[in-house]
Image (cartoon, rainbow, N blue to C red; front, side, top):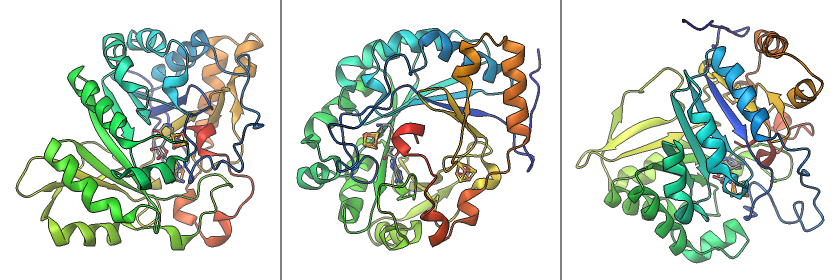
Length: 338
Ligand code: SAM
Ligand code: SF4
Ligand code: SF4
């Protein structure tokens, strides 16, 4: 049966869904969960506050019935969520959901890769910001070294998962790692995407001077490699893709700051406690968990989601200024899930 097409105020369809399954993480990346804020006394969500698997499944089915075809699970660190493969196998059975992906720091990926694949996971984006231990450790601020992460990437590839690497580049922190990362993943034939450092949340001390733009990164890369542009694979693809001239391996840029892509943003986000957001930089979400737990029917839930999407007029990145970047109401990346 054809699914309805719902659009927001700018005609953008609802096509992708990102669900955060947990707000906790075993890393304290400085640009995401700085230890000074997310310390030992930080109040993470209790078990009861988190959406349960039944609730995640129910919400996903409703979004899929509204046109969503692709789902990404994220966090916090999603692999810390107990029994995640069970959740994935339930989601993989939803008719009409064509693609399930996961974003992870990969610290626990090796031992879980086979279970995740067997559960129906197709794609994994591994976040890795450096190849040298000193830099990596200064980013994750939790004592994790690079070698086990690379081993886990090998294991995930062997398990049949399709892997891409995401590297957030922050000037002065890890920009010297652009070329070593490019060289390493080109050799392995794994796509690497460079992500511009964004002003998500209010705790990471962002300012424009810390942003390594696509232009800066492209310049560095093109001193070493010839890059050929690759056409987008689908409408709303966020990465600008290139291929190395002498190989079929791709490299990409996610230019959320320097070349914004709000006009094709088709993503809805649900935080681990069930708040539904229509933009990564939103201040307020709609609490779907309250509706679920107060006996709303699927049709009623569907109607509130449609209503919210139809009122959507977000285009934060297009309007970004030093002032909006300092706005105090933005939610944190570890909460909304990136
Ligand atoms: N813990 C998982 C991980 O790191 O892959 C999933 C959640 S994490 C919030 C999702 C993605 O957001 C990661 O790739 C991370 O590097 C990225 N991220 C976090 N803070 C960011 C920021 N300020 N700017 C750009 N990307 C950021
Ligand atoms: Fe954790 Fe991912 Fe945030 Fe790093 S980016 S602190 S791994 S949630
Ligand atoms: Fe989408 Fe908001 Fe990002 Fe624009 S700023 S691309 S609307 S999430």
